[in-house]
Image (tube, rainbow, N blue to C red; front, side):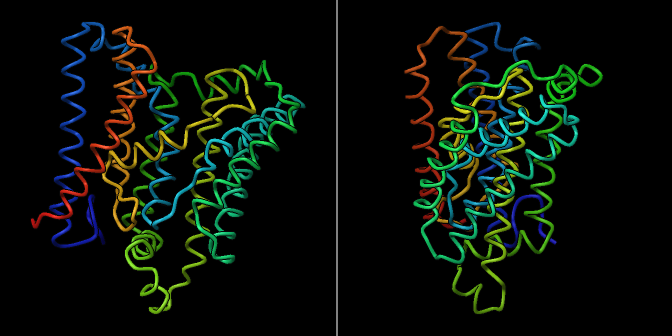
Length: 321
């Protein structure tokens, strides 16, 4: 079975070094901000960084699986919104919280399957398909709610998803469990092996007898479930579900995966790297906020980090290890 980092041989060193480098960058970011702002390393602030990273981290886990297949899912923000507003309306109509949450996950899974089917069987480009469904699903979410947020969600829902368990934030626990599940799928199952294989060489994978279409659909379904789960966490934290929620979240998820070492050309990536990438983005936003830096510059910094990560990945690919 594959190791913690990658599948085999020579690539173990490359992927391990990338993850160590990403972790080192996170440490450097934290050191810099701790020097510039003493509040940065306070326990409450570190907890805020981790909690703030949860929504992006969950989405990014699903996005990583898609990216490894050489695909992309631009619809995750819209899926997040649609799943959360459907959950909220049924919850407010009297449906028990547990079943409403399951319904949200089902909505995310269904929308992911739609994406996957269009890509796999209609042989359409993932970018164009998910660009279209991004707008389509967002439109349906706005129509479904008449453009209005659904507020005053049940307190037991908020406490069970966004509260604390033995003083430990539940959103962090949910994100960690989902990341572990994603890691197990990717590194310790045949599904994970086929995901890597599809991204590495789809044609060869088809000729080897693997049902590529099936595993593409599974991958996009998992991405949809991830987006729905992120929507559940976000709705619990805000106490409301909004049809406009999740806008530009696909950018942050792609950024977290890219910073964590996932290659947009497919065949490479890890859940551990993606989680570190999400923490880097959250720490960066938090640190710049503490320094009263305008949000415009935060976007500039995020974009610069993405470009640097892609350049480092390209340089690493051209070097022999």
